[in-house]
Each structure stands twice: as C-alpha cells, then as structure tokens.
Length: 114
Image (tube, rainbow, N blue to C red; front, side, top):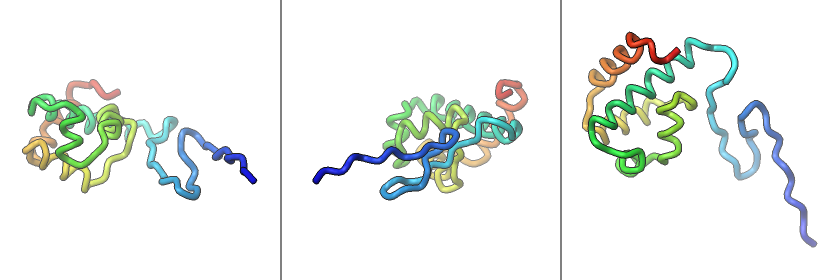
C-alpha cells in the first residue's frame, strides 16, 4: 500500500523540524533591524574580500567546504553565520580577521546596509 507524502508545515519562511529535515536558521524578516544591518554589512564585507581575491562563490565554497547558495545568502544578509564558518571562509580567502573588520567598518560607514 502506498502512502501519500505529507505536507510539511511552514512558518514564516522557516522549515519546521521534522524527520529527515534539518532546521535552517533564517534571519527574521520583521523586526530586529539593527541585527539585519549587521548581517548585511558582514555579508557585503565578505563579498568584497571574495571579489578582491578573484574568486567566484562556487570556488570559495569548494575551498571552504560550503555550498555556493549558502554563501549567496550570507552575502546578501539573509542567513546567520557561525563563527566556525567565518574562520573557514577567511582561511579560504587568505585573509585575516582584521581585514574583515576593516571591510565591515567601511560597509557601515558607507551607509549601504540600511
């Protein structure tokens, strides 16, 4: 007897924890504007470092062991990023934490992430 596949409930763009599904941490769309601003500034800083290194998202993902779609979401500020992922990306970019901090400050002072 074949069973019909059950639909998974969705809640505000987040997948609900269910058998076989991994929970995705998604930045909330409403509220917490300052937090979103920081995510965007960090993502744009990482994008700038990637472009300066002459890498595509796919190449950086292969070096750092991350998916290129995940990198795209980080660069646009749509996803939260773990500290371990930041260190892997910086290692793959041959950049230091100081380089990242300078880029984040430049992004914030430029007023781009609003």
